[in-house]
Structure formats: C-alpha cells, structure tokens
Amino acid sequence: MIDLNHNLTPADLAPGLRRLWSLSGPKIRAIEATRTPEEGAPVFTVDGRYTARGWTEWTQGFQYGSALLHFDATGEEDALAIGRRETVARMAPHVTHLGVHDHGFNNVSTYGNLLRLMHEGRLPASTWERRFYELALKCSGAVQAARWTRTHDGGGFIYSFNGPHSLFSDTIRSLRALALAHRLGHVLMAEHDERVSLLHRLIDHARATATYNVYYGEGRDGYDVRGRVVHESIFNLNDGRYRCPSTQQGYSPFTTWTRGLAWVLCGYAEQLEFLATLPDDELAPYGGRGAVEAMMRRPALATADFYIEHTPTCGVPYWDTGAPNLHRLGDYLGRPADPFNPYEPVDSSAAAIAAQGLLRLGRYLDARGEDGTRYRKAGLRVVHTLLDEPYLATDPDHQGLLLHAAYHWPNRWDHVPPGRQVACGEATMWGDYHLREVALYLQRLHEGGPYLTFFGAVPGDPA
Image (cartoon, rainbow, N blue to C red; front, top):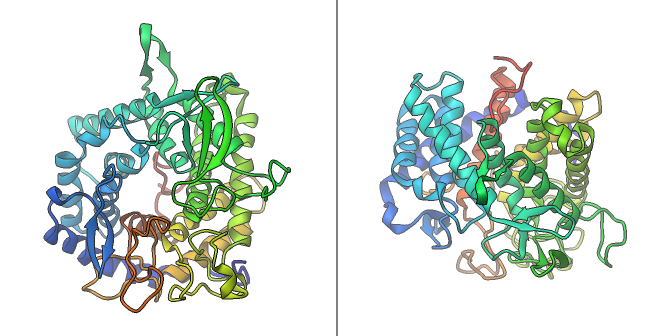
C-alpha cells in the first residue's frame, strides 16, 4: 500500500521539479537532433536512445507535446519553436486518423496545449493561429466520436483500433478530445445531416467504461475486486451485448494491467473537473448533473482506492497486479518497488499517469467540502518518488526522462539489459510526457499560477 504517512506539499517538491526541468530541455533537444520523422515517432528507449515501433504512431503527440510543456514550465523559446513547428508540420494526419482511439493523446497534447497557451497569454494573440488550433481540435473530436459502437441498452462506446467489438480502458483519456471539441461548439455530422452531440458520446463512453471495464466488488465474476480494471471489454456486434473481459497488454483478463488502471483513474478525474465547468442545462438531457457526476465519481474513487492499496509503498506499481512471478518478491506491497528485481518489471509510466489522477481527484473532493486528503497524499508520494533516482534519468546521455517504464511486457517489446531477466532502465514517450505534465501541474500549484487543465482555467482559480 502507498505510504500516506507524510506531510508533503507542492512546495516540498519544488527543488525536485526544478531539477526535472533542468534535465528535460537537453533531452528534448537530443531527440530532435538524433531522430528524423521518417524513422517514425519515438516510442521507447533502448540503451538510452529513443527508437520507434510502427504501430499507429500514437506517441508522436507526446513527443511534441513534451516540448510545449517544457516551454510552459521554463519559458525556453526553443522548446516552443519545436512544439509549434512540428505540430504544424507533422500532426495533421493524426487529426483525421480514422483508425485509432488515440486522438486525446496525439492532438490534445499538441494542438490543445498550443490553444491553452494562447488563451493564457503565453503566445502572441493571433486570430488565425487560434482558429487553426480550434479547427484541428474540432475535427479531432468529431473523428474520434465517429468510431462508435452501439450497445444493447441504447448507449455506446468509442471502439479501439482492434475493431468495433473492442472497448479499451485507455480511451477514457481520449474523451478530452470530445470535451474540447464540444467546448468549441462543434458536433459530429452524421447521415441525413443528423447532429450528434459530442458531449452525449463522451458521457455514453464514460458510462460504458464505468459499467464494463471497472469492477466494484459486487460479485460480477470470481475476480471482482472493487477498483480492479480490465484492459478491454468485448461486445457481440450482432446485438451490442457485452460478452467478456479481455486484455492486450495485461497478464490476463482477470488481473489488472496497471497502466490501464492509471488511464481510467486519470481520465475520470479530469472529466469530473470538466463537468464542473458545464452549465446545468447542458447535462439535463443526460439525467442531470448529479447523475452524470455520480456515474464518473464511482469509478474514479474505486480505481484510486485500488491503486493506493495494490501499489508498493513508494507509489510505483509493478506492470500488472496479477503478474505471475510477483509472489517470488515476498511482501512487495509492504516496501518500495524494486525496478531491478529479477522477476517482474515495474511501470513508472503508470505511476506518472496515476499521480495526476490522484491529485486531481483529491482537489475535486476538497472543492466540494469532502476530504480529498487520502488522494492528494498518495499523488504527492508518487511524484516525490519519481523526482529522484532511480526513476529520474539524471544521465545526460540518456534521452529518456522517466526510467523503468514498461510498454508491452507480454510481447517482450521492452528492452532487457544484458545480465538482467526483466526490462528496466528505459523510458517511454508517454511516461516522459506525463511526468512533465504532473510536474507542471504541481509547479503551478506551488507558484499560484492558473490551475492546469486540458480545457483551460477553472472558474475561481488564480489568474
């Protein structure tokens, strides 16, 4: 269980955050200097150098989005130039990519960050540049929403790249693409000029994920533990009925792949923040604010509690809570994770994603007069761990920022160093991005800056 016996604050992490940003810039520049777009988007490091894995290029937005986050935190103009230039030059195919569920990853990390920076006055005001970013985000949200499978109960979900039968837990964080497009006044135009509400599809997808991909300890199957997450749910396309749990990157359909758990935790927490900015009349057609928020609160709280209780004391999880050799580690939940162990990899990228979800959930509860202390403490503990060795990559020759991240251990895509039995010592592009994102989140809290969200400042926060 994560150690909550501390009094850490964002101010306590400020020295670690400064250290992170001092390391971040040279690594971004090193990737730009040593890789060409023709090599494909960087995915994970091998011996400290980023390599590609040609599979939907789902990490390209994290590459250029990292440069934008770095500029946001440091004001270094060359990072802004990289993010701005490469978004224009490279990201358009992602805006209209019909074959993936990753629009929130690629397009909100690039066009979305640029639009946010312009709204915050960090970029010069330019009507046409702003409209360019807005158009990209409108198109991205609509294209993402068009990947739609209807379920037998009248709802539906955004289906994964596996096909219309497949509901991925990852996709909960791509709902930010629909949220931004809706916020910009956009809709999906369907057959016969039917106007399809992007907010409606966002809520339906969130409900499907909450219903089928998250467990609540209610006896759904023999492995129904509250907060457990399945990576994928399979549906019968003939009648839209749920068939079974599945997984692509976890150990089994009856264990919890921890990055999938983290996507769900973070995705619901930030959607709860988004819902809070909508007027009541927008939510009335979907049962009203109370019903919609309750539907999202339930999985957010369940997965947050599960993460806290099934993660080692330091806040960094092993890659799957049911990984077959964890038992060889003894009481692995009662001590910090060991990324150099010979049995199972840890996944620091899951920790970086989950940390942000825990922090946002804690703040959301505090703002409503509830006690979010447990979740804020857990999030701060996780980030405190990631800002130091052995997770923070202090070697200037290593292009990664967050070490000991895992990609696809069942397929053995992760690099195993000579003399080791499991993957360790390498970074992933999404792990680096999310460490930067949670670092920027905490830096703004510490410095009293605008509260960081994907959709802009929350009313009532410092300007």
